[in-house]
Image (cartoon, rainbow, N blue to C red; front, side, top):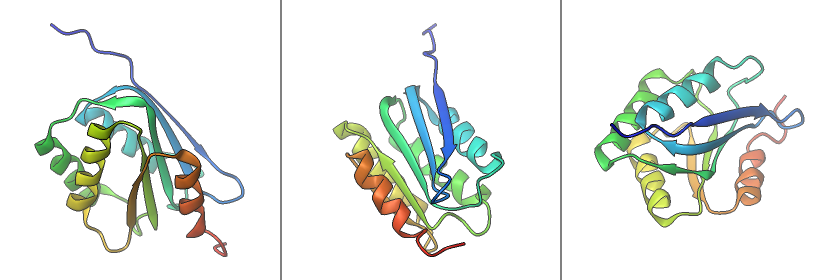
Length: 134
């Protein structure tokens, strides 16, 4: 039996923008993705604003069909209204491609979705939608 690597997801809410930043590490599987998003949705202080998922210290261990399952899980269970913007940050080509697939399967016109390689660029993009919001 393969030993499971420890996965961590640390979520913080930026006080000034309300943007949630979820920093992930370890080898992420489908259940980790679902647990992580549920933790965000249940987090006190998160008001449904934009989210940046930082996967720079993580690696996906997810097959293509599981990407569709994760996207459907998010679509079925996300709060209403959903976040206006969701960004994924990952430097690895394979994970970048899987993240792009997630965006295609998620298809919710209320949420803009983008994949980035640079975290500061992703944060700047996520904050734009929150400017002027109370």
